Length: 68
Image 1 (cartoon, rainbow, N blue to C red):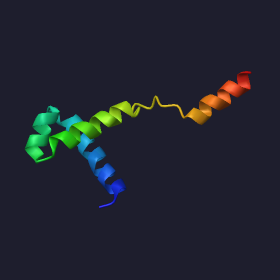
Image 2 (image 1 turned 90 degrees about the vertical axis):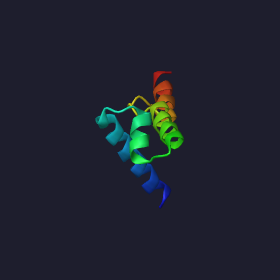
Image 3 (image 1 turned 60 degrees about the horizontal axis):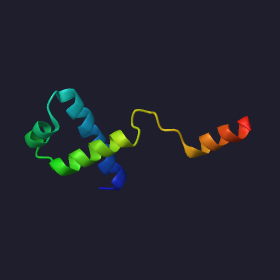
């Protein structure tokens, strides 16, 4: 399985977990998922700005140059 396929699979599991109403531990236990990996991936997604709040550095530099 490629890294993109693994990532897509994990994103799908996270979406399924969010709709399940279960805790992360309950979800992992009920599906035989490695709890540490699931916690790590879901946490890293939160920190990556999965909410859409990430602004690329190139955009920040362009905005800065246009105001000076």
